[in-house]
Amino acid sequence: MGGIRNLAPNVYNICSDDESDKEVFIEAAGSSYNGVERHVLMYWDNGTLNQARVVQVVELVGIPGDYTFKSPVARLHRPMQHPDTSSFLGEFSREERDIIIELARKVEFDERSTKNGYRVWLRELLETMVQEGFLSDETFEVIDREVPLVKRRPQVDQ
Image 1 (cartoon, rainbow, N blue to C red):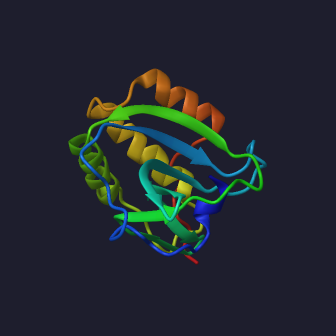
Image 2 (image 1 turned 30 degrees about the vertical axis):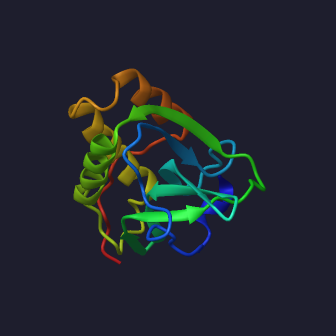
Image 3 (image 1 turned 90 degrees about the horizontal axis):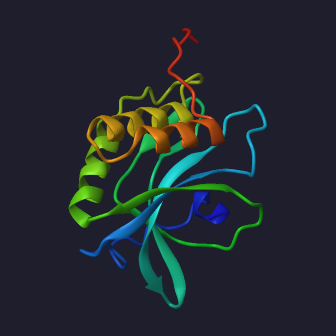
């Protein structure tokens, strides 16, 4: 999945989500946490386009100090150049995926933050998913350890 973080064009209007149940995953850049900010995202397959796999992504994008959230976004999958950490969240219906996207939209973030980035955003989304019954505490704890997710920190004025 490493290539889906690239600035690939959004092909959602060509290969949108459908009504089938789908397996949903979390991906974290790299095979382990190296002590710096680590990009994380949620994704599921939307199908194929010209024989290339298309995945729908739910993610905070940008760089520290310039974050944004856009949805719906679907991108062509590119083969991994580096192994990434991937965790299975479960199988979700279209209705459940739509709710997850709405929960993601509601996660508060400061687009100018240099302290609270991808992993904080994902932590708060997954915590909400636990509260709403979409995710077990055990699955959350595994992802928290593997990524690791971090808690929101006070933003110091810049």
